[in-house]
Structure formats: C-alpha cells, structure tokens
Length: 380
Ligand SMILES: Cc1cc2nc3c(=O)[nH]c(=O)nc-3n(C[C@H](O)[C@H](O)[C@H](O)COP(=O)(O)OP(=O)(O)OC[C@H]3O[C@@H](n4cnc5c(N)ncnc54)[C@H](O)[C@@H]3O)c2cc1C
Image (cartoon, rainbow, N blue to C red; front, side, top):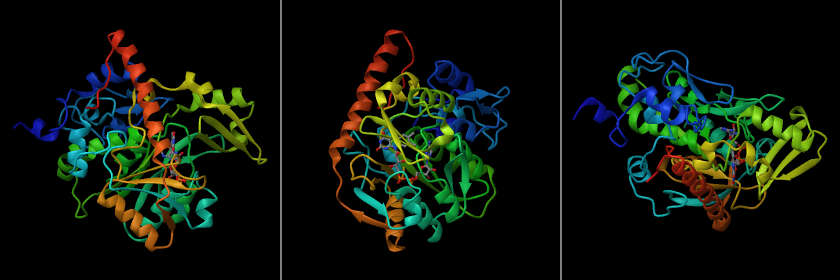
C-alpha cells in the first residue's frame, strides 16, 4: 500500500487543488465551508466565502504541512464520498435511517439557564452543551460564529462561558468556522466546533482521513487531539452580501436594526430592535440560494457528534440527534451540571419533511447539471 492509499483509504484518489478548482470552485458549487483553507495557507476565501488560491500550490507548504497531494481536495464536502464508509469510520456502525444518518437517540432539549435562553436561537441546546462541556472539562475552547451589528459574521474562539453565550443565535451567513477550527488545533487540543452540514462533513473528512496521520505526525504534542463536532440542521446558507441586499430590499430594513433572523415553517422572519417582527415566504429568497445548497443532501449534519435543529420540537426547544458516544457524553454532562432539561417529545414528521424537501431540491439541481454535462457530487 502506498502512503497516499493509507492517507485517504475511503475516498477517490487525491487530486489536489487544480482538480478541486476545476471540479468545485470554477463550477460555482463551493459551499464556503472553508475546510480546504483550514489545512493550507495557500487557499483563501473570497468575499462570498468561496475558496480561491492565494498562491500556487506546491503540495508541500501548508498551515499544517500537506506533504501529500490533495488535502484540500480530500476534505471538500462537494467532492463525492461514501456515506456508508464514512459511517463505518466515524460511528463504527451502518445507518439504519437513510434520511437522517446514524444516531443513538433523538431528544428535545431546553436550557435551564436564563442567560442562555435570552441569547439562543431555539432551546439554547448548542450553547448549553458547550458551556457545560467547558465547565466539565470536556473542552478547552470552541469555534462559534460571532456577528457584528450589521450581521457580518466571523468564526471566533470562545474559551469562556461568556464568550460561548456571546456566540449564541443562528446567523444565516456563511462563516469560516472550519478554517478557524483547523488553524486552532495547534493551540487548543480539546477543541469543539459548531457548524452546518457542509462544515461538519468537511471537518469530519479531515479528522477521519487526515488528522490521525498527518497532524499527529507533523505536530509534536503530548496532549492527544480531542475534537468535538456539534452540527446544526441546515436547509440553506447564504453569502453575506447576497442576504444583506435581499433582506434590506424585501423588508426595507437595515441589517443594523435587526436583532434576530429565523427561517422556520416556510417563513423568513426578522425581529427588529423595537421588538416588531416582519415575515416573508422563504421561497422569495430562492434566487439567492447558492447552488452548493441545492446539491446538498445533508439536512441534519449527519457527520457531527450530535446535531441540533428547531424542527421537530415545540417553540423554545431544540431537537437534538445524538450520534456518537461523545455526543452522548455532552448531553449527559449538560444534564448533570444543571444546564438543560430533556424530554422525549420529538415529532419526527417535520424533520423527515425537511429531509425530503432537501432531497427533492437536490434531485432537480442534479438532473439539470447532468443534462448540461456538469459534475454532480454523489454521496452513496
Ligand atoms: C445557516 C443555518 C440554517 C439552518 N436551517 C435550519 C433549518 O432549516 N431547520 C432547522 O430546524 N434548523 C436550522 N438551523 C438550526 C437552527 O437555526 C438553530 O441553530 C439550532 O436549532 C440550534 O439552536 P440552539 O438554540 O440550540 O442554538 P444556540 O444556543 O443559539 O447556538 C447556536 C450555535 O450555532 C452557531 N452558529 C450560528 N450560526 C452559524 C453559522 N452560520 N455557521 C456556524 N455556526 C453557527 C453559534 O455560534 C452558536 O454556537 C439552521 C442553522 C443555520 C446556521
């Protein structure tokens, strides 16, 4: 077996940035997950979060030395891979549910901490798990999505409970969380990341294929890597300028005046500083959805340790899909430390509906691309 085979046993042969560029970036289907830029300093993100070369790739020099052709290609979630093989590698078991991936259990969660609920999107499960994990010594830091007053986002490292809470709330804006995650592994070895399906898949691909072999070889550290992925359900996500222009024209409101955005039950809702809300059908936003989201099948962040969404539970609660032992530990730890209440009141129908809508959208987009002779990623 060659070194390259050992490096990416579950994926198509490594092809490097040239291939990534022609297959994904030039084709306009980069998801902006930013995982490729996490492991190579020669890739940067453009204004929309798409990957672009900063300088020529020589396959050797990287933030974490690539040394083997194709790190960026191998971690990209828009490059075909096998879900079945990934399940085996990550969870050591095949999925029984083809719609939402491998899982151990699904529960409803609500934070018991007022300071978390005040800032959270739904039941504050994500923030509660993270704050409790920090308190319980399960993590030393986490990559969260922070926003400015006009809703520009950036990935930040939260090392305190206050910083975790400051990052709460959904931003429907591409955020380079995976890049931050990759760049922070050197400094924080017990690190978590919150991310959407593409971000958690990209990062998981990196963990499965890359980190064991490359990082452990190239980084000297006595502390083993201990990485946690918290996934968010995601139907679609937007480049900042596209969503800003659209929100401002559809609602006639400046981004600075908005305190919360929410996409649920087919409606895009904004809550303004004065407490009033405005709603539009989410289909009015379909013209700004990136093609990568149309091609994605991963509504529930299937490669995360646990995944969180709003559909499936009552308002003010979060739906939580526990997938790995680590995910289960996060749940148990948060409950033990008094951060959450847990119930089994989850309705699977709207979750399945979300998956089915996403898969329907994917079928249409894939068919169109195939007719045009274009590349379509497959997730067997
Ligand atoms: C782009 C996007 C689309 C979504 N679409 C759906 C959907 O269709 N259906 C559904 O049920 N749920 C969807 N969700 C998930 C939902 O909006 C909530 O994030 C989820 O229910 C968790 O709520 P919470 O109260 O537990 O999270 P909180 O406690 O508020 O914490 C949210 C965490 O997510 C992080 N975060 C926020 N935005 C981003 C981002 N853009 N990238 C990376 N991390 C981020 C925050 O930093 C924080 O750590 C989506 C989320 C995102 C980001």
